[in-house]
Length: 496
View 1: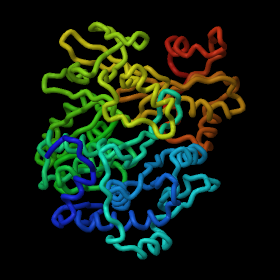
View 2 (view 1 turned 180 degrees about the vertical axis):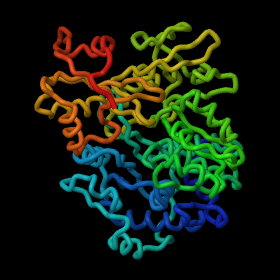
View 3 (view 1 turned 90 degrees about the horizontal axis):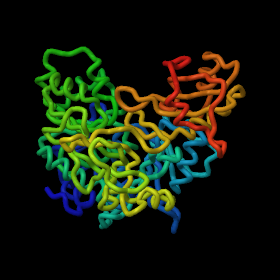
View 4 (view 1 turned 30 degrees about the vertical axis):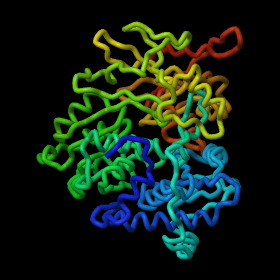
């Protein structure tokens, strides 16, 4: 196994004839051999729908399922570029993602079709419809020959939110999946006898890089869970003899809230890898399940990585090692121990391939030749990095970066809201959504009803901490002095 400049196509080529390992989904098993055959059929069918000369981008608005996995494999073999559409977004916001990513076709399911604004001028196909079945029936696996992509060739667009608050489509190349997948498989000694559990959303980079690609690199089987379930986790581990699971955000916390079982330490689970779990949850999960929990630092852009070592304190991210540096955001000079600065990759972009259709945002992320994470940190006297918050105007919820500006735009629609700001309220893991409103006469019942009625406000975007104030201070340029407001707040007017 190598961490050289491999491609996903290289990894999948080794699985073409494998019939004793494959994909498990809701009790049904598909060997890798048949799964990759299905991927070729889908690549051929979708190629027939893509206009000549247009970006070969296929939007996928699906829950986790075997179909999603087949489509990702088809993209990995060079058939098209898969666009992972975030099913927590709604209406016009989701439609804007489709347009921004130049989707030529969008694949939906009965559960997700209603999320997309019908005014969007793009062909949509329900993968459980007769239309999709008929389309696939017209092609065979031999109708598509896997391409020979270069490591830097575009494979997938994954949306995230940056400091402007607007989603950006992160370009994800072949190497961005293949190299980390191979590295993690080697790091954790994963092989054909292992079973990878995939329950994080497949439109998210954590699922595809730290889950699916790891299985492809190691030749392991994959268990796909439609949606994450804390109560179902233990049963799945036992049923499929899962050995490796990935996570982002709070899943470990939710699993630990379920009743402990006497045989929890005796399951097959041995490695759990992800990011943003609390130190207490990592320790308790390891005790309860007898598994090694490894928490890393990273983002969809994958421009910088910090790896925990055995001697890393529980409240630290890992040791400070070049090319990662902590710099003053204004001068770009490294800061001394104990001083907060921005976490950067001083050697360049890492695995960051840029934002699709947004050269200005790409240039800003790479300003000065360094990849800028937008995250703040400080180094203790022993050389370990500690997280200190976020440089930009965004927050982190359940492992996703969420911009504040789109939420503020929704809140301003309320007839009683004169001014508002949205910010992240630190909680045990990540942030909660806080809102400060100038809204005379606003009641909680009226506000809750308004939020429920907004079609483009996702569940994670809903404010759970609200402060009602008489006014918001402004700067000399008539902008709200947000930092001053946040630092002066007392207890919220209501929460929950």
